[in-house]
Length: 168
Image 1 (tube, rainbow, N blue to C red):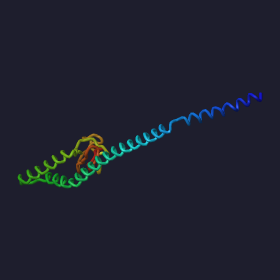
Image 2: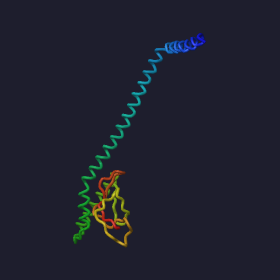
Image 3: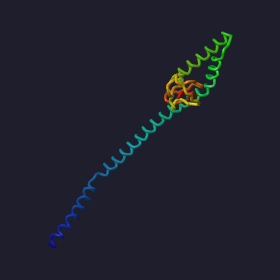
């Protein structure tokens, strides 16, 4: 029995020596190559992530700049819309205001600006700012009854919410 215990105890020690010899047998050049290759792949991945992040930030900067420029022109749009809604006897004046408004709308369209918020549209709290509610049997529930200010968006970015009155 004692001899069997000695053999059992000796076997794991021998296996440990063999595994240590196997570790020593690996080529140091291979380890260095693997380490350098791993470092190279990591740097390449970091650069690719940096490139993608830079492109995304550049696109966001352009979109934000465009939205800011459009937001600064919105008071001009509002004033032209008010001028068009005023009664006037001077046809040339009215035609001049209409031409100016049409040109501004063309510029907005070329920039990718979408104008929204019309009477009869369904109310969407993600696009519209309800400042008043009325009870109306003629209009359906959550329908825009009156528009105080048009809304503007570029792509998915809201430049200005439409200010509306909603029917309940």
